[in-house]
Image (cartoon, rainbow over all chains, first blue to last red; front, side, top):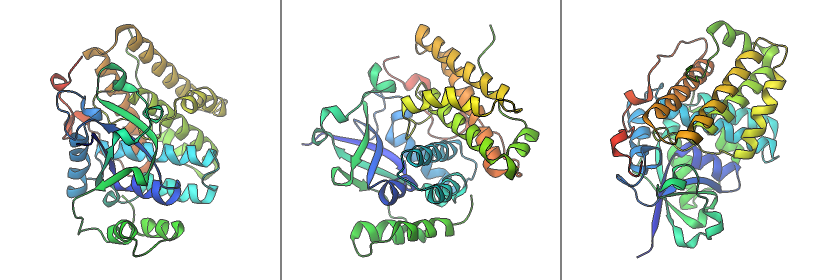
Length: 188
Length: 146
């Protein structure tokens, strides 16, 4: 049986990586979905899933876990703008979406990766991974290298437009069209 | 011993920072807080691993961003927050994972995230909550190998 690793992110992270960062994903991956005894909560995909799912379900605008990812997504935009991946106008629009976009955009999704397909040089040990936690960082995960797993999201109108249609290949949205849909989701 | 802490901007300072004429200063402050968040979140066992954390870039920002704030009311708090982060890292190198350091790390991150919420929601005043009050945060006794 393949060795699968798992990582939880808000779907906004998948969307931005997919549409704006050349379908290259930054992913912390744990050796199990619920590594209860092996990993701290900071790298436990099951616990992180709950940290996103409940504020999403309750439309809790103030959840720290969501604020934390807003902070990191803004950081990602900064780094990509500095690297020339994003122009300054798109970066400014994305920053606004990441910092202030609707809580609906923080629906959790799961990356499942057959870890042995990732070259060891690309699996970085960092944080608790250096101290026995079963986790790796893959900062350049390609879409052919993971499955995207999620519960059906029938609540949010953007989800079938930007995520499902794209995964199914029925429609290919231009990134700026996708950005407009994200902006249309309104503020937090 | 003085506990190293993140000193968030006051409401008045946030209001000043968010005025249109201070947009460059706001970018510098935001950039610095992003770098500090990444560096300290890497030490946490409760906060999620930081997405898009590039160590080299964060270290550079910790040096350069305060300089972009020099001569403004934001310079001193920026320097204080960098020094507190460096002190936490020094303590971590010396002592490793201890309950005391976990509390310091989480306190630093909570204060930084409270400020982030205040800035993004300004002029609304968001409620202040600790991460531990939310679901899904790992109880420390569940962390193996510590």
